[in-house]
Length: 482
Image 1 (cartoon, rainbow, N blue to C red):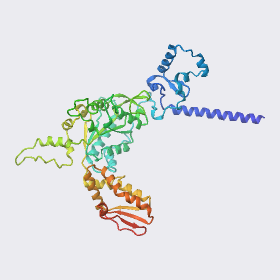
Image 2: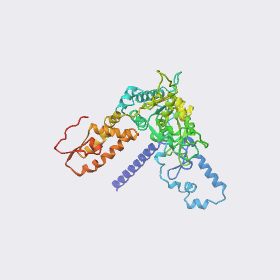
Image 3: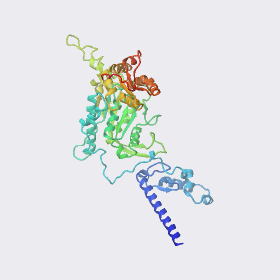
Image 4: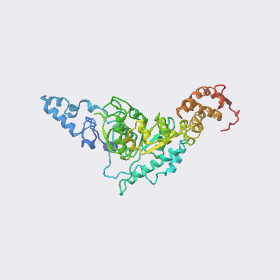
């Protein structure tokens, strides 16, 4: 009998220990995030200390007081109602909210700010690569664009030195945002993606085409910051030192000769001014628009690096018009068509040209670094296909290697693919669509025959006057140069 009692006592002690450990574990998990009111969706740092309710629900003091006021202002007798509900006041006041999911979805949780600890820079300057090291790492992924890679490396390096310096000292370093101008498919977005990958910082990429003035259908300008907050796992401290890339920035140019309100053009530029300059704004957590069902976080954009990019169609004509105004006649005169065939016309861009395009001076003043990307030539397109770490040809080679088939490309075939890509005038984006077209039949037919050991893409196959060279296992095809 005594041994049975001891066993029962041991079981009780074990259960109590598990319950304590489980409670400690749950509380430590929840300590990382702030509590959110189930009624108004405000966080604890904004609404005050939360009141715990049944069903793991939290209510702020304001919403609790409003609920009591609503009860006191009515003439209904609640005594019997409370008895029928077993005295569960939370279930009475808030209905089925107590039966909600036990926790708020993680994407709508907000990490607590540790106000007692000094904010640490996201990147330690001891581990921060120098500009030449950043450019060397970009060279592994991006072909050409030497000036853009050099200027972008210096801009990012100086930006994070500015964060590390803080506000100490007499001289305070101002933020330098970046504007990237280049034809479509020249690598603007890809450069920023690789840059964030190298530095291991939060990155948000958004389109300016969906932005509208507050109060109209579309995304508010604050939505670009909410995407960065989501990329930083809702950690405000990390988000405040991240990078935001706004693509298609040329689509918010001021409309010419418009008689209606320009809600997606000049108004968006005006709304972005405070973000680019640096200010504290309230952004929704886990959503792109503010409403009563999502919590709000306060993010300071002072240390966020904004990189804007756009193709700016027809800007080349504005640049040529300005340059041709200096043309003269005579033996030393310049021809009117001197710049017509210049593939790198954007390198002559000035603020005056961008203002004529439709960008307001206040907006351009907050983007002091202007980078121009080169137009891609046939030689650059060939290098893009085969030289970078994740080149598209290497991807196809790896795919066929999984079927134990060796894939080769003749140099003449690559040149013809590059020529076809230039005809489409969509830059490097055209390479994948062209290769997908020609590789479709090969990727479909190769797995049928296990005797195939190698496939060589020839010029005749690209020109649709012949077929690729097929090599059987054990019979090697002669090596091709290049």
